[in-house]
Length: 274
Image (tube, rainbow, N blue to C red; front, side):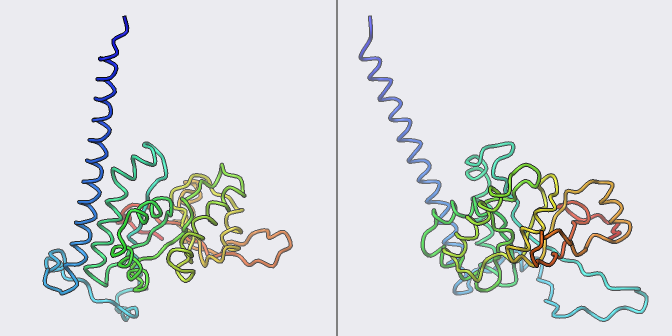
């Protein structure tokens, strides 16, 4: 015999669980937004010190390279680039990555940059930025706009993601970059469109992409995953930077300046050869 009371109880129990999850999610999001807002607002009057800066004072900004020591054969310029690297799906779903990790990256980066005008960071993917941006209050959005205006935040690449070089067809690649760049222009302004292509993790390397990036008005292209034998050769011969010429099929399109990462996208090797 069918038990209607049990069915109704099960439905009520399920509804209560859903309501609890929604309330918990709202509380967590509200708390995160409040913490981020408090961190940013607390720095406006300069009363709350930045513990990190107090412990480790910032290195003075150099506007030109220092003079070469007599014992040195040449100068070595070291560029430290804090950047996002948020996969739009890999070992977890896009939602899992965002909820468990990415949104906290955005929260902490914006709060940290607001504390110190010398700090800089670059966003690569627009997929997660769009979702995070839509969740923010107007005060946080205005802070982000100021960070872009101050040159502390910048987009590089700026597509929906760092597209794979080997698998997608050309129209899919162009569409996802167009979508991301259009959102940046509409939301922040065309002056903040990316100037540099950034493909440090996609597998495969397509010669077509060099042409695409140049046609998209990128000034340079940074990539990483090439055949290890070729990378070792370029590394030993200090040829990790070059001007990539390509077949433009009759169009008058010049090549693009290209840079290959020295030792993957992690910490650099102490045995630098590049």
